[in-house]
Image: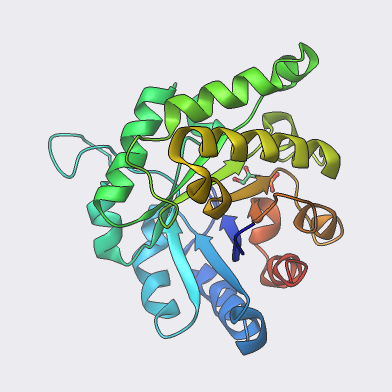
Length: 252
Ligand code: 13P
């Protein structure tokens, strides 16, 4: 299996005012040479903080990303932000298809795919999120839902250097509930096989697959050491530098 460099990504969601740059500073200070030689660390603040965060992180190994983008590069789309604008502001990655956007804004797979294409067009890493709801899990539809979302949301032109998949079971987000590491490995294995079947074995083994959903310092190791898990997409615990760095340290 190809060696995949772990990626620990923080999704700040709708949190953070100007003063939050101090928290980013602590992340930068704590991401020392030893850790940064082994893993990638990404912070995705709200749009309003991207430019300042990118300027603050410049010269460090901490990457800055966004939580969404519009499929088009520009145009009459009030309130939207394009992937090109994110790149221009200093972002290196963008999360697309997060379940909160799928639920809050009715985003479907075709739109998520178009957003991922926009990310690639702008040279950004697209972190494409998939995951089943509680009801789907109870109905034993996890496999079907994840594979359908994956097929629909990942563009044909994807390459392993800019594509990251995040498996985030909806019921595990913000709930303190988590699947077992065995369950996560099983779903990640499905995802990897599907990527291999569609894009070839080399891409299957090179694509990073993150787990997300109530990842905390005390449970991070169980996921990050599991087979086929190449990192984490962290919500609440990414807002505190100490917790985020503690999670990152479990990836090595
Ligand atoms: P929590 O870590 O707060 O459960 O959020 C996970 C998530 O949605 C990351 O994108």
